[in-house]
Image 1: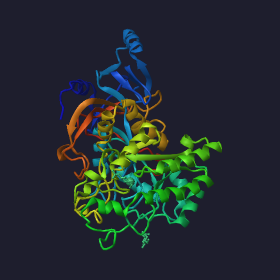
Image 2 (image 1 turned 135 degrees about the vertical axis):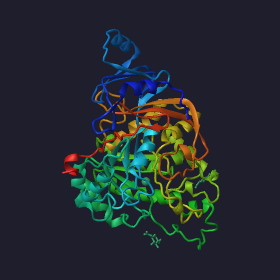
Image 3 (image 1 turned 90 degrees about the vertical axis):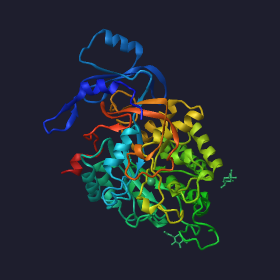
Length: 496
Ligand SMILES: *[C@@H]1O[C@H](CO)[C@@H](O)[C@H](O)[C@H]1NC(C)=O
Ligand SMILES: *[C@@H]1O[C@H](CO)[C@@H](O)[C@H](O)[C@H]1NC(C)=O
Ligand SMILES: [Zn+2]
């Protein structure tokens, strides 16, 4: 841990108060956040961010205008000077499985959002499955929101689920504020969230035709190679990673995306492919986007977008040791050639965003057998540093980080006050030390099950302070008690 920054002491002195309920609150006036290195998705400069007492950004300023502002002497202004630490928009993780209620031993709102807060994620978007009930009806969304209410340390938005036959729930769930719907084209791993068979896909597109929300897909298509038994021609040793990899070849992703292209052509629906692993997916999507754009589609990116995840950009199949199923996820981590191609697509801005796909489970479901272990990598806490570790070594700027981890996910999910340093946006801010490094150990992990393929790795770059709507929520790996996060849903629909 790195306790050597002296600012939080000053800040705490100024802001911590005790409310009448005895809960610690932080009184916040108008604030000025300074940095020699303000980073947006497009630029870096010496300056700061002026934040109103409502926690909303008033203006983003250069050092010259700040000097002028300070000369005019507004004594009520509280100044937070981060010095050389980069000041950036809080990161947004649009792909997190929180699992509460129902599988709260896997992950819960308190632990997931505490991990997000220390890692610089000021908004996470919860996936509709692995909790029980799954988020496939308005009633179920209410149950989930009730579980999350008052225990989130960062803001939380929600995906709805697209399962066979639940189309009639979409309008009310959209009204309640879900960012979109996610469906599977292959077994989801949990029985209460059935996947869409080919005949189920049309009704989903038809129900969302022209809608403003996103339709996201887990794009792999079942075929005969999928197995959990090591008793066929493809299987030699279930403890070897390559055995698992052979059961989920690129073809599964390519087939699924090719199938979706027919619907992309026929309907006006924003289609988003989550966790792309196989590089060959991108050219297929680009062709579909191109056709849409030529027909004058005015959606962001022609309404055809894709994300990849930190594990596909950080790891490759060659380095996965036998029995280490903390590396197992689906689609699987592929070889080094594939990883390099994904980085080429990052370079060329052919991906739109990067997420964690934080999908934890209890240790007993992992075990050493790659075919039977739960598939899911946990990393909601480490996304910013994971991306920076690779990106820095490859010569990328901090603006690239902001583009893919803040702006991109906020654009996708239509969270209009999130992801950017801009007037009118929430003052969700992080101070990031791009030159610091740290080791991932169980002691620093804040999410519930301390399982990680990054254990004992050195990561580059560390989030030092995290502010949510102008209020300090985490500092140097510690979270302030008293959750200040909000559910990004319509209270009128949910809590009536
Ligand atoms: C996947 O396909 C195989 C045949 O290719 C079939 O036996 C199996 O039941 C299918 N699994 C699912 C979940 O549809
Ligand atoms: C990676 O896999 C692809 C296809 O699956 C193959 O063409 C390529 O040669 C492999 N690269 C390495 C380094 O093994
Ligand atoms: Zn997922």
